[in-house]
Length: 245
Image (cartoon, rainbow, N blue to C red; front, side, top):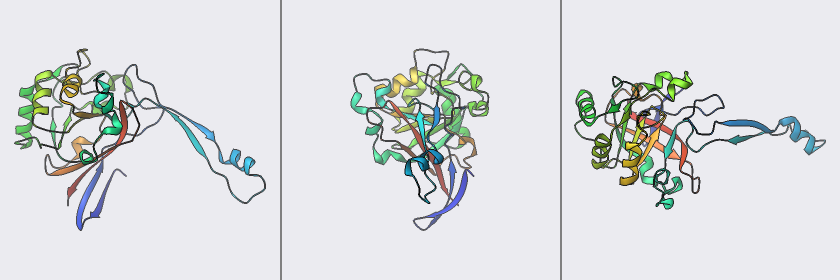
């Protein structure tokens, strides 16, 4: 199940998992390493090593993947060669928990830009007056619907243009999240959104699931936790949306 009701700090909360799975079958961004998993040691093999014992053995898997596969956060260093110190292990703990809003821009055609005007109209439609300073913006492109069609998922989605990107970051958000494989329009190889994030030293997160299932457009929290991969340009993340029942 990807949704549950929990009690936290005396409050009843709904929790929705916004994370995609990791497996060799998932689509990956063109040019990135696919996921590889294998049986490094099986229960049977470990029992052979242990000899005559009632112990049933243990198993471990081998794993190889890109630091930008599945639901993942980009480090500042990903697009900023002069800031290797801002690799993903430098992501601040306080930014792992963020007040959040989400907007729907799924009417924007694939391989085109999401403009600032479109972002503002989406905010108006969602009843979102301001982006949360110190918080997160999630935007839904509809690309999530193509997850099971790998070639289309990694090629048919829109991305934020330079003006929209810089305006969003100037509102003080600490993370921008999308359901698409990238925050940038795949037809624009100048990568205006990645470039803006590098300039403003702000992280962003891609391949986020279930954004459209969050029942409120504001007044919820996201928990976004990257791995402490030293020197990495990104990391798989586990993301949950939480709101009061």
